[in-house]
Length: 570
Image 1 (spheres, one colour):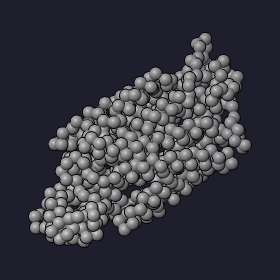
Image 2 (tube, rainbow, N blue to C red):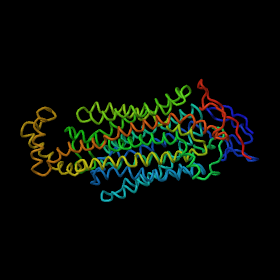
Image 3 (tube, rainbow, N blue to C red):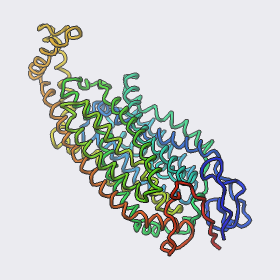
């Protein structure tokens, strides 16, 4: 028996508060069950404000995640570590993040998502602040802190997209998810920028880790005051409560969803590439500048001079805004006419990013401006898929299993993607001769700069600010000669070796992106069947029925369809 179709409210997909009926179309956590005499809770108020707060928290989430990458040369210098140890910073964070994601997915399908989000946000903010006080002889404590930050962020990244999905439906949901995932590249870029500027202003890189905890506390207060937990699947028609299912059965059923599996594999390749780039791209650009003689190495202090983190952060922000916005808009326009448009857009973006990233690596040292252009193009194309992949999951998985599916996608994409790629790149860089660079930087920096100035002055190059050409002609030669005699001369050679080793270690990334594009192409073939099965399951119908209803939330003309009648369970 169905309830009256809820009219559209103040925002697309919002039910009128008077909409009631048998089956509880807008009634509580157990949507799809007979509500009886119980009054269903009201729909979530202020959906736009709620989504805006969730977007803000996602922004702070990714700022926190990539602030360390923005000050990585300073971290290496402060703790006296090499590339493989630096890669562990991201690996331990992602490892704890992915291990706890399934647990939060299980809890999110059964308990208050808002409380779980608040718990995660409070945890990661507090631990990030604490790690900024770790002394240089305790690098292991910093690793443990990053692991705990991953626990907190696992709660948010698993549950927040499902909360957004239950506030909107149809094209409005796609736009809301686009705004939510716009915070991924935007927050990442702001993390690099905040890390770079704050450590310059404070003359201490550790102050960069104290910015996001303050923002996190403010966001936590807004979350508790404004955001409400809407009924699960309330805008999708129906869905049995997840508590009626065993977790093992849910996982088996999700494993038979070919679109979910293949799109997750495609996104895993994207995570592999972006995880390695996020940590190592600023460090690689810094080493290129060292190899070209355009920057000075870290001098045993807490700052390394250079604007590569600032530039990379600006590129990440700009490419992310363009890529996520373009992807969401293309999906909204093409999906009503082409049912397989979403995975094909993802495939096109990832396959197009692969040659751009390859050219960026090859052009970095001979022509840095060209490398920055290709980085921008590659990140823009990679960003196309962020909102689209999330939208694919939401319409090929029934509402009662979305948190679990989100958690499994996070587990797989991080376990096989960015959990290992930063460490793998660092390990390859060490094996190829780049790992010795940090130590030789310190030794070389202790001798070379003094002799450079002294001998350059004697030969007429000391007036460098007034006569760059004469100074550059003399200083590099005498730097190498005198620094060699005092044990620091390996630095200029190790600069070249360090940049070349890290470039070679990053070369597998474009080929990993190409594999991800192939997985998205395969997902396109399976999508219509899995979307139809999810729509039927949401209505309480057998997944493989005879009816051949429309597969999408929109009709051919792009109009949003009203939810179908609810099917109560006696």
